[in-house]
Length: 346
Ligand code: DOR
Ligand code: ZN
Ligand code: ZN
Image 1 (cartoon, rainbow, N blue to C red):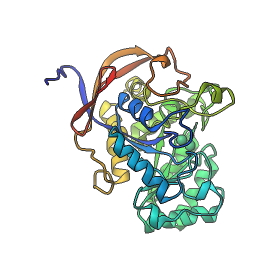
Image 2 (spheres, helix red, strand yellow):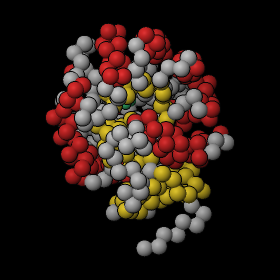
Image 3 (cartoon, rainbow, N blue to C red):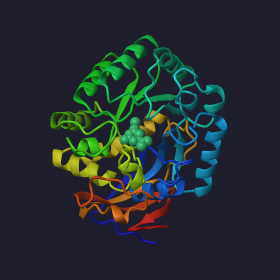
């Protein structure tokens, strides 16, 4: 089949360093299949799924079960995050020996690691077993500063999830200048909007914070564009669950911001694909992913209003319904084959 890409842009498949697939145990919000289909529609071909499932992903059997499920679905490649501690507890670390076979990212997303000793041991393990320790330490900049201080004493591979504040970015910039191994990620919503009431964690910040994040994306101090795709049912949202359903709008939200700020689509591509691949060793072949032949065809001139009713995701929680966004994913290729084509999954 011939594909007419005249005037369109072909990009490497997007690698989402941070999403929530809710499988197992919270599948009324999303399951691996609906999440991966929504992701493919959004141009994401590799997903790093956080460990706050039910039960928590904290052992080799659970990780293996999810990796097998992903393999059987044949939709996106999965990096299944393992919790740092058993059931997100304070001090009971997971067994790195057995779990490391199935993952290379550990994180207690949704839960801060308050115990400094636990964090130190986690950092030491990240060096010993060669994995990324992703922290969910914002909303407080102080927690990020604490983790940086720990990293100074105990070398490790630290990744700071969904940063939202100028102060946090400044702390990370300083840590990078010291030569510490630290990277960070931003979400589409914190770049796109400020001071909104919609419940999300970390919360929407001020306009100056948002501007600082955009400058961080431009100058390279923010490494990665994630999604923090966090599907929730209407009922759970009414009860106050934090999170935004992002897979199907992330690219257009990012592109709209980048284009508005005069940041190149090449830089966006770096942040959506190259940087996360590098950070997780996907390019180096450390993760058993197919990656080659993962491509996205986008139309950078298309403008479209967000319509949550058209989401493939099981949930529709977003404050951005009716928003006019620029940039549209037309086709997604997985391992050289068409996976998503102008509105339908193949
Ligand atoms: O808003 C959020 N919701 N932020 C997170 O980091 C976790 C997520 C969730 O699991 O719903
Ligand atoms: Zn989080
Ligand atoms: Zn998250």
